[in-house]
Amino acid sequence: MDRRVARTRALLQHAHLSLIVEKGYDAVTVEDICARADVGRSTFYAHYTGKEDMHRRGLEALRAELAAHGAQLASAGAPGLAFSLPMFEHARAHLDLYRALVGSRGGTIAVDSIRQMLCDLVRAGLPSGATEAGAAAPPREFLVQHLVGAYLAVLTWWLDGGATIPPREMDAMFQRLAREGLPT
Image 1: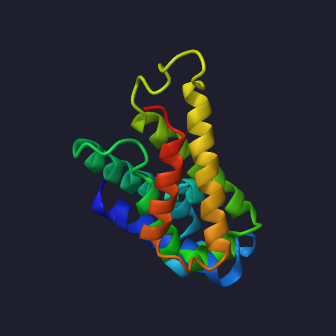
Image 2 (image 1 turned 60 degrees about the vertical axis):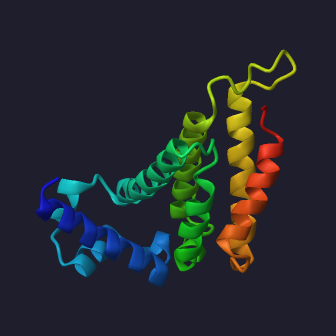
């Protein structure tokens, strides 16, 4: 990507996120974002189709970070749930943004995007024979949905409580309980 394009997108994303924290997702307009980033509307629309597109695409950096972390752990022999700790760390670092998004259209977009992202990462991280333990073993997609649903429920509970438990402890608890349910 051209440096100017990357710089413009970074300015727009930074403006978008800071405005969400200040005003809430629903109150932020494309005009607000452009004014904060000091770019014209035509420049905004050269990069994004609208505010929701910008919000979804902004989560791609998180996807890349989680995938890279998962690949690093996979190459070190650690199986499947490598997204957990970096996701807890990311969420805690952005607690103010989470609070601003709760209950808004932006929160729904974020949760849907994160759910899909985590499902993709869990699918890729589960060993290919993860459900070949016999007829009683649940289908692979059942495992994916179960793990991601449990993770998002725990993540939401933790964030709603102010994220007071350190991310490493949250990860350790989630990993221990999640691994008990995975076929060996």
